[in-house]
Image (cartoon, rainbow, N blue to C red; front, side, top):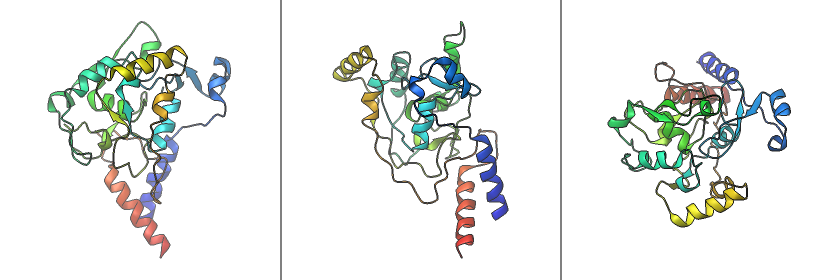
Length: 246
């Protein structure tokens, strides 16, 4: 059993490629390239620095690893804002612990901006609905997979969605969680955007999360077709930890 857990953790470590770079925002394109990053198309949360290989957003990866699941639609990037408003109007929002079932969306690919929007003539990409919703609440993961921990293929609750950046234990709520337009906030965002500070409004609202002692920063890369499942990972990891502490 300990060997199973070790193989899972080893696989997770191999798949995780986050590289912290001090002062990354002030670096030139040439300097970023040396660290394996580039400035690309903005993510929904107004960040532009991405990984050269898998195109995930640097700041979003940090947000996800800090266990912050939250967004305010008024502060999202202008390329995504109206599209997300339309999508959230179709989601039956329930209690955070429940599945938010939307079978009319769950099996669709949605035409949406992506990292590819900045790489050529293509301005949008066909993306799975659950990945689109994940990137709204958690962050932009580029080419990486997103899957459902609840195994309900019609669920679009962001707290039931994970990528390999997620920690073992997600937060109990989405915070902030504002999916309707507010004229006052839209004006505030516009003013901050003109000053070159669009992301600061939302970052002030992120709630500090208390990490569970079994949290592991590098969970595996998941896909709907894989048998590896979040629940079994937590179970095996917990059993192994208990056994080693005896």
